[in-house]
Image (cartoon, rainbow, N blue to C red; front, top):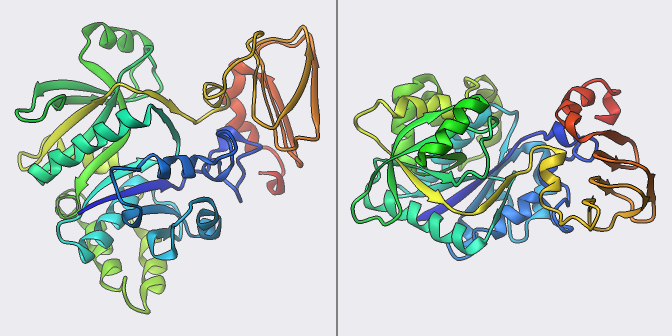
Length: 361
């Protein structure tokens, strides 16, 4: 049966001060009044039934997640007692699903992305599910057609076409965040695409692979799963999960899987508009600019003279942000903090968030 798990555990400090410790970016209504998590869940329409959608997030965000995503219930929220990186989020999901459905196949998605058009995403995700349904040994990744030689993304090289699966390929290799010159060379070949961080796995295959690559993690996941449906669930999870090795799915699963002859790594190209909302400039890409290049968020009041190429976001529609002679700035207003910086310096916001008083983080 098809399932989907959305990872929603990131802190989103590059989107401070709207993304805060007690309300991270995936739960903030940043996209036309909707939060990223809600957008990610709705994107699954037509491919994965609502009752088979899961969200892996911090346990402390459980109530906010239930409020943000229509139809989600407690049983479909996998609450982590603490963050242990993406391999453990994937492993926990696989362990829970395999306990209930030995034939479970699940997509791993994130709450960070804005992807359009939805119809193309749905068709390509369906193609990924079909690959694993035909052969459970397959690990499927999704590759995004690059629009520039980005050095902040990983890349996947397209290999041979897969017979009987139109538009699907073997993955020749993965490269983590190359420098700009290398990225430019990749684009010239026409064989490389951005690695989206989205996957499709067979739950049992994932657990077997974790047993080979990270046996201590598999042992811990088995102990958690053994008590998932009894009164010891929370106590077991809270005792074992914090001690699991902290490692990403890329390094803990995908990298060693590439050299394991029992597994097949496939890639499904997605020719979509894909925005990884990880910074203020990337959020700005989701907003249509006005005639002066200013990107003003919904429900934000901005009045400007001789101002251009601004990103202006306010949580308070009754608070006017006014600018004169400003250019290439990010201006973010909240009830507790206001951020003003040059767009070129937006990558430093994470560092700034670490310097403010703890009650403002």
